Length: 190
Image 1 (cartoon, rainbow, N blue to C red):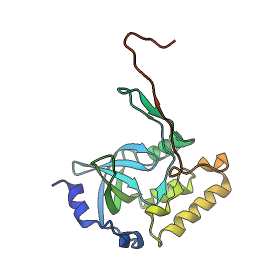
Image 2: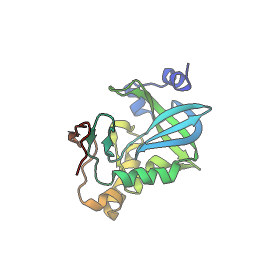
Image 3: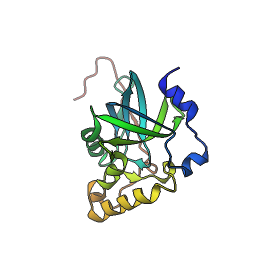
């Protein structure tokens, strides 16, 4: 059984997990990947764990599939949020406090919803405070949400990061259009 599967058994996905700010499990590992401004991959004792940062939502990056030809546009400041998180944690040893685990509808991969700490700093909260993510009440407890919302309010007042664009669209409202570029044999674009 993988480490994340074991954690899945111990982590609660009930509503009580939303009210309790206590981590279900804690682990340490090396950040080996950043895929979005709020998603990282942590290697803990040889097991790679997909982590979504708890309490935040970053702008969605553009998606391109070179094999099928489909693509989805990203949001403004998505690449900047991705870079900001990468600079903070990539190739760094972090502590991960898992609040719960879940599986996305379109994937069989388990994801740990967690607070990520680097040298005692709450990276999730830093991403909001630096203006690269929204406080996301869907994935935050009532005990934690006020701190995340206060950080967002300060970033917005300073007009830093994504707040530089006035009224940015949060990722939970963003509906990218799927574009398909047909690949014709022997056809070269001009």
